Image 1 (cartoon, rainbow, N blue to C red):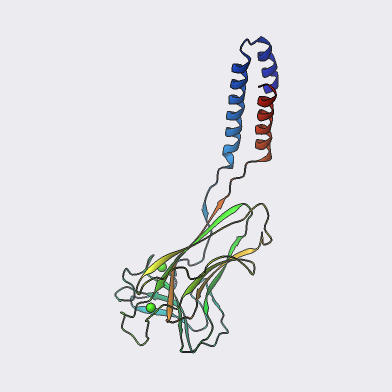
Image 2: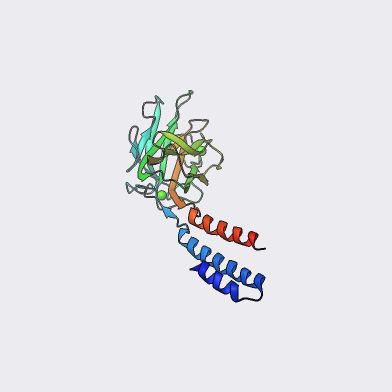
Length: 256
Ligand SMILES: [Ca+2]
Ligand SMILES: [Ca+2]
C-alpha cells in the first residue's frame, strides 16, 4: 500500500525531494510504533523467605542449627568440619550487633563459622522455580553485614570473614560478587551482581539458584538480608524492523 501511494504521488508531484523526505518520515514513524511493543518490563523473581523473616524470632535471639538453613534455604558445604557452625536467623533489635538494625524487616540471615584453623567456607543456598531465560538482564541484590563485637556475648565477633554472593544456572556459576565490599563492624553493605544472557546460552532453561557464602576468613559471622533477583528483558529489534529500515535506506540512496 505504501508503494502504491508512493508511485501515485510521485507521478503527480513537482518537488521530488520533498515527497521523498515525507515518505521516509512516514515509514520511520511506522517502524518506531511497530518496535514499541518490544519495550522491556522488569520483574522480581520469586524467592522463598528472601528477608529471613521466617522463623519469627524475638529480639536479641538466634534461631537455627548446625546443619540446616532457615525456611527456604539449605546449607552449602554441609560436610565441612568447622568446629562451630551455625546457620539460621538473628533478630538484632535491642542489641549492638548492628548500628542500624536489620536492613529489612526484623531478622537477618546468619552464617556463623567459628574456628581457629583453616577450614572450609560454608553458606546458604536456594534453588528458585525460575529458569535461566534468553535475552534477559538479571540483577541480584543482597545486603551483606558484619556482626559487631560491640554486642556482648560468648563469641568474639571481631573482624569480617569475607563473603561471596553467587548466581547459578543448574550447577554452573554465571555471576558473582567475590568479596568486593568491606562492611565495617556493625554495618551492612549492598552487593549487586548483574548478568545478561544473549540470544543463546549453554545453561538456558536450567533452574537458577542463589548462594550466600561466608569465606571463613579472619572473623566469625557474615549476615545476609533482603535478597532480590530482578529480571528485565533485553529489547531486541525484530528482523522485520531491520528489514523496514533497510528498505527505506535503499530507497533514499537510489533516488537521492
Ligand atoms: Ca530481614
Ligand atoms: Ca565482625
